Length: 303
Image (cartoon, rainbow, N blue to C red):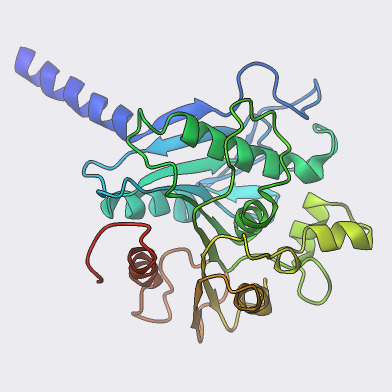
């Protein structure tokens, strides 16, 4: 009986070690109003109405010797978060490669519950980067090898941190450099002008009638500079939700600014395929890991 209890306890301990949930902020959550509500479970791993952001840490059993880490931003049109195929599945894949992964359950922009909702996701992404750097020693992470990955609207958030990291909208008491070491963008929302914009993401983040200056500010292909981190992009040519030109324009901006970049375009696959494009046997994730190795962001042999 004691042996069975010990095995059960060990299994639970291992699970807790693999997944640790951390409140993004202590005490009052900045830019939240007092009447915040609890999040809504939509089923099938989708959640909406997030007002209390969290970071979910997944530490690999066997860590890459370069001690690489990545922050994961699930998509959902800034209306919800697809936590399974753009969150947990991705964290597991990174852990299998020896990379620490942190799913960012960022706040869903909402005027009823937030002040200046347009900067709230960026606040959460910056705070996530600050938290990972703050705890890097405890988690055996190299602060120079912390990247960010995002899908769809989460790709917009990831590209926002990659291009707006100097626009510090959190307290950042320790004055950490909030620039990701690398960015990975999966079928990302990037440009908010018609006809490339994903209207739902744009309206939810900004408003239904945003100014041209605001649209330009958050059209991240227009914000790429020589300081933008190396970026890997993946998209499908037949994506009818977020036009592939979002990725192509971002890639061209990287090239123009002499920033290292790589892009893989599937012929088919539509939108929201996560790690597995069911129209082909080609897997983009190993291609991305090769890219990380070639850019000295993780240790290992090319796959």
